[in-house]
Image 1 (cartoon, rainbow, N blue to C red):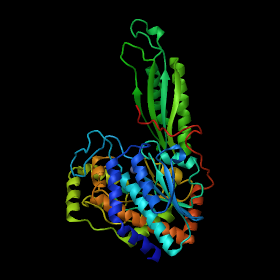
Image 2 (cartoon, protein in one colour):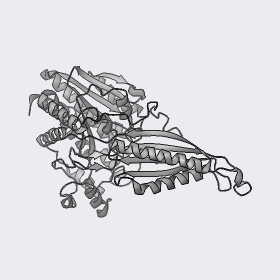
Image 3 (cartoon, rainbow, N blue to C red):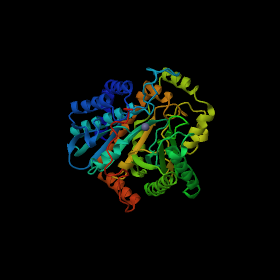
Image 4 (cartoon, helix red, strand yellow):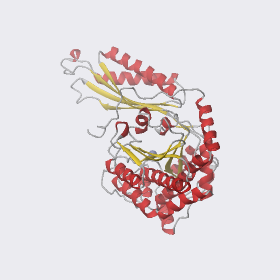
Amino acid sequence: MSRAKRIALDWIDGHRSRLVELCDRVWGLAELGLVEYESSRLLADELERWGFRVSRGVAGMPTAFTAEWGKGHPVIGIMGEYDALPGLSQKPVPHREPLVEGAPGHGCGHNIHGTSGLAGAIATKTAMEETGIRGTIRFYGCPAEESASGKVFMVRAGLFDDVDACLSHHPSAVNTARLSSSNAVNSVKFHFYGRSSHAAGSPEQGRSALDAVELMNIGVNYMREHIIEKARIHYIIEAGGGQPNVVPDYARSWYLIRAPEREQVEELYKRILDISRGAELMTETRCKVEFIKGVSNKIPNRTLSEIITANMREIGFPEYTDEELRFAERIAETIPPEAKREELRKSGRPGWEELMGVLIDRTIPDPWGEGEVSQGSTDVADVSWQAPTMEFSTTAYVLGTPGHSWQVVAQSGMGIGHKSMIFAAKAMASSALDLLERRDLLERALEEFRARLGGRKYRSPIPTDARPPLELWRH
Ligand SMILES: [Zn+2]
């Protein structure tokens, strides 16, 4: 282990209680996307205290910020998220018990995400300062991963233009830097406007906006036979009229359109827009399209994955206390074996069948997933088109824990989550230092990045006039 890494790891161990406190405070705040005012301030203030130059309210979002230290290249980025999910409030106990009924909770563990990144950045800076390593370490405070995909706006604002490589950490049930990609997506609302009338007395006067929504859905459902197998299209009807004896003059649907490649989403989206026009024509209504968000597919990077895996193995995953293991056992009792089997199967991890009897996984397996596409989407993907990027995960949950669940909230707010955060911070700092100290590794990551893009140019998935939806929660 290099001297710089040793300094970084010592810094993390020496500041463990403060880091756990930050992690718990963000957990307790549990603020939704784009309104993470307190959480983002807490993290930005901490970075500022450690000598980082902080820019707040970047890319048109009050809760987005950057914090950097050092100067010149290489510029190593570390991303941190801190948004919570609605309705998942939960005490740090192994049974369902909300902290505040109906309030948000950290159902994706982003309190760990933000803190592990912050800790990794400060530890890296400390090592750079003490050993004279040159370059820049930059923390990206990234809001609203779950809702508005804040990073897409940050990319569009040029905040990643000069970055040489970017690292990110996400808590999960396994220690890995997976090589799979993720689906590109468009999220779009279709507002139809018709004309109301008495549905029995004068239906000939009315033009039903709900008819338009239904016919559009039928059109899309027929289109399904003639699209690529890997695409995913799902919708809801958000507004469908007031009561049956009034012809609805307004109706609204909300679509998500996913596919493994950004250009496939563009193509499907174009066809869906045509179908919405068809629905307008059939019903003599008018349609207004509201683009909510778009993200790209993720470009993985094996070089970064190998660097992170090697560092995780060198550091070693910590032991759990008996109390933590008892907590884990009680959480495991709330997860049916079939559900656990399905989670493991979906992970695609080689040998997953042998993990059914494992409670919580401290091992660090070889990275897997090359050539596979996970069905979900993430705005980390848009950063991965700017520079070599890798989001790795560390074990924070018992095996089989479903995503976006009260079990995630509970485990993110106690010892098991804290250990995941500290371990991730160490892996983050060690990997950032590898990239700063070893130009050969950074060069290899860059070469791989260029090869994977194969000359493809990044195009922002959001329209040029799209603004961050700052009013998202105000209705
Ligand atoms: Zn997440």
